[in-house]
Length: 372
Ligand code: F6R
Image (cartoon, rainbow, N blue to C red; front, side, top):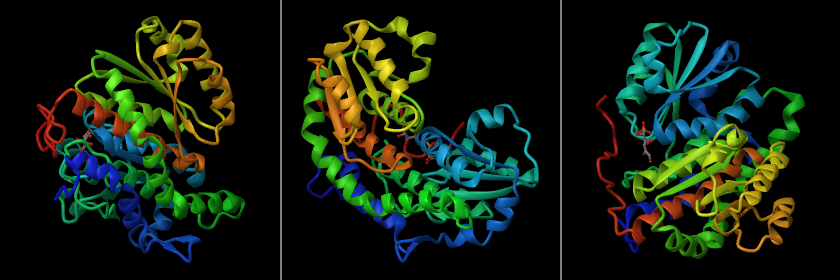
């Protein structure tokens, strides 16, 4: 039921403070310890593995990209993220010493399911991170975690994306539970998880009307570029996917580090550009990308998405009249992408509404892609 919402997509975006809570319910004990039953039972095997390989398609793949850095940092195991279709095109070498995770909303995506059958055949231990209970991927994996985000009806995945990131961050916490030298880091992330629902709610309130105005300005554009790096590389790619699929506007998500290696040739004062800022090691590099864009006259069409605590970025853009800044709530680096994607989910939604498109059932798309 859509309730008072005009579309499922908007309802599901606004449901995220609650869906995130459901994803975490019963899994953070005493506020200070993650307990993922399915994963815990296999912890020693996972720790012994030589590679953690995450396989997924579309938005689920982007969620893996958003979580890769924290999984690597906390597990200290090499983490590889694979597009399911490409994984099978290459018949990627898989060994018994690998743990392969299959991430999917529906649990029925044909490419991801094929990759699962292939990994099983090669003796890898297979983990499922799936929303739909009883789905094929959920049944065929050795163990796993359900996302518990509730049913997602809109074809564009929104609340499941944020729940997928949260589950993968919780897996990273489980994998580092015994590591004393990571305890301060773990405490900061657990604090971020506890506050995440409230921060999503705050972000929706902060950005909703602002993003609606931006959508009205961009509704007739033919092309948009989104730049981010580090944790926000996934955010810019996911933002581009959302805008493409529901608003039918050509949008590209590009690593900000690649700007000078080609994409800068596209930039002129007419092209709308979205840049995601982070307050981590990538901050200075993203600021440098903004300087390069401003030097090419992008000012009137530049949108910066940053945390409300990102004083460096706020100071940089304060004196640049015309630059639009979307401020989101602040959290720990590995969860910031959960908050930064929200204005882009809303932007894609409002763009589709402004363009009078079928938001919940975009042309040529199905909720579950069970064909090749
Ligand atoms: C985009 C979207 C698709 C799916 C992809 C994988 O909004 O929904 O890109 O993410 O088809 O689907 P699942 O997660 O069901 O395997």
